Length: 68
Image 1: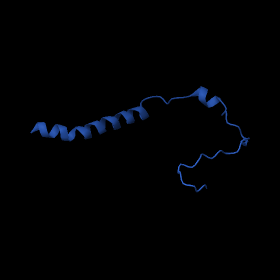
Image 2: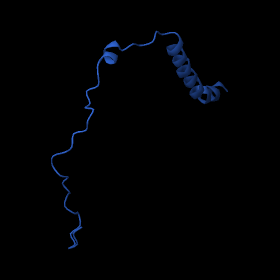
Image 3: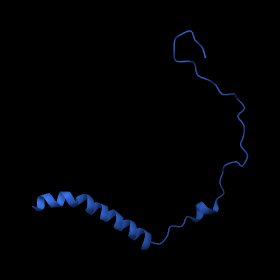
Image 4: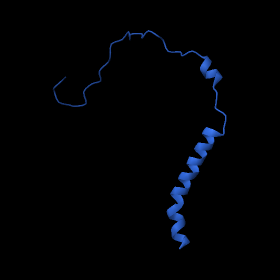
C-alpha cells in the first residue's frame, strides 16, 4: 500500500519543499543589496541616434518574374 501512496504524494512533497525554501528566503535571509549596481548610471543615450544607412531589403525568395 505504501508503494502506491509515496509516488502519488511526491509532487506535493516537492512543492511543499520549494514553497518552504521560498518562505525561508523571504523571511530569514537578509535582503540582497547591490550597491554597485544602484550607484552606476545607465549607459543608454537619452537621444536616439538615427541610422546613416537606409534599410537593405533582401532579394525575394521566389524565382518568378514578379518583383515586389
